[in-house]
Length: 321
Image 1 (cartoon, rainbow, N blue to C red):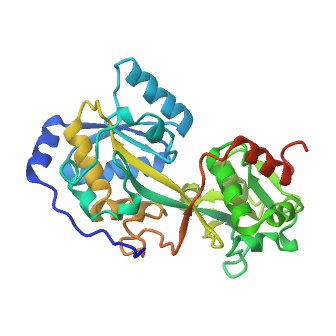
Image 2 (cartoon, rainbow, N blue to C red):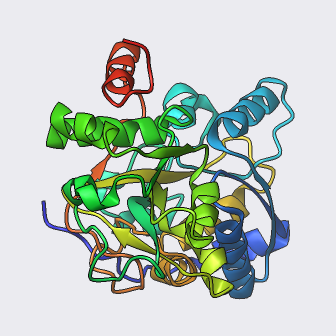
């Protein structure tokens, strides 16, 4: 399938006027707080509408959202999440997305559109590395290269048991590279971290040379402080996690919600997001607007069956045989 670059789509003046009359936005999101602030700042700068937010990791965010809707006390206007669970299990709480309600949808690649959500980001899983210990030329570029004996004892692995996303990465590695990859990785004498953000801090401090799987956004706050950390987008495979956005069915500010989602997937919205944080997007596959270009992104499986999950964990030494 040919990739599609988002083209500028005109935002109806009537929608802008109606949204500005509502005057505010409430965003529920699981992406990093820094990214949320960058997005809301860009939206306010464009339309003069202030946004507030609730930021939680996916599982408690979904629980909070569903509980509020079941009780008839929803406060969210827009839901932005890196887990597909809410969109798949609770479609009744989201409004239909089409070119009539959100004009920018007509410009978006159809592969990444659902009836009630649009995948706005495809965040690549990366290797974070300490630049005092590893050169740009010497950092692994493919997942197979992390098996080089020189990395033994220098790897901080983000525990795949803590998140369906990280377990999905392990699943993608086995499907593409085979069980032998998992077994060899298990022999690299890695240590575990309970979050990619904590992993970034430990790599920046020099405790480990490499941390993975992770996201480039974890290193952004540290790089701003001149810490010796960088991230490398990996290939073989290009494992990604998809982040989707939806208008909430019972939004208190429905016109603002429509305007926000349309702007987020517009050229201006993509530039705002991708120039602030290193993410990829189906709307900018070649990086024209500042997003990280990906050639062949493979979305990880967020719902690995329990039997397979235990099999993978046994192979890497994190579950009893």
